[in-house]
Image 1: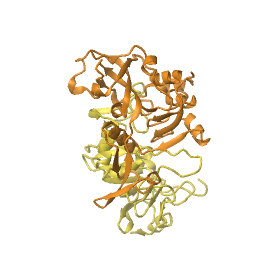
Image 2: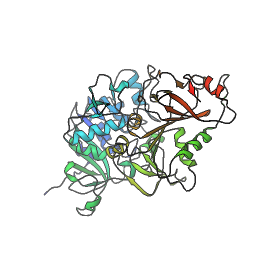
Image 3: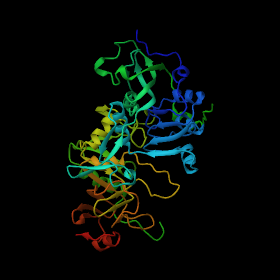
Image 4: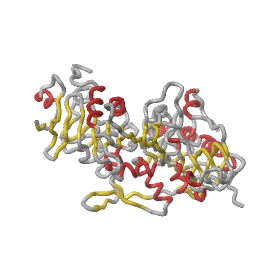
Length: 237
Length: 216
């Protein structure tokens, strides 16, 4: 019998090792798997490379993971936003590495990583500092830059509905990077708002097919980053 | 603003000018900042579908107070609504729309634009600044028409329409049209060409506020 449900969020992330590359879903707080990130802080794995569009806000979620000095390197498109305080300070002090990637290139690198494509050419960033040192090639008279696929050791994502096979649906713009991140990791760990029976999700409406998912934990009442930030909540180990 | 007094169109009027030029049925991506104002001024009877790169086609107005949904936001991470007929999708599909040339118009802000259409809008390159690019480089690389909406000069009265961008580029030869408080300017093979000048602004004044020669 296939059953990808796990009992606790603590257990779901328990084998994340030092030095792992972890893709974390979310665009701002929408879709950010806060509980899984906080359990990763409890676990304390270090020297992580984190792939995520942003670097978190306030002192919770990804920002808290960074503040706890567990992240060696961020791969992202937009490492600052309102209430983003932790990353900028560490970055200015040279205490964290940044690989800045155009947002569409980041998405395509993850998609490629999940699809078994090692590298591809894109027109984004040609003739800009972000293409410096990268291989370029001309196709039909236009320049393109080569970018590598990203395949993570672990993906942490948040979804709306999940069944024990790992079929997932999402909620509105909380979907963002999560479906492609599910495809591009050795182990994909999902926090679902609700677990349903197989067949309850219309097969026509499944967004992430279960084959891309390894573990699911139900978090029925997830915390909201903006609410925690407004309360000046600081997540500490 | 030092000794410099802002002249010409207001920001709202600039947004109105952009809105009036959007063809009926266009798929449009509006950048963060002044471009966001454009949606408020689309003439009645014109249907525009707004794309926001975080995964929504058919973005609607700002929600009423108390109706905000934490999981329904735009690229600027502000609360939005979805129109009837909207759809959600993941980031790779969203940038397939952008990079694959499926969107008609991208409206962006700018730090500098050159008369060959180079755009700098993501970094001042200052030491200590946190570089952040978002989707700008993909938008200018892939969207059919790239329109810039910006103040004509900086708050310190420095050129923003320049011979060569000093700031790091977002894209080379990508801008098609510029909407400023002083004028609407097309970027042509011969350089900047005036499309419309704001009321009360002379061509000579426009030229003094623009580094490259403008074609009348």
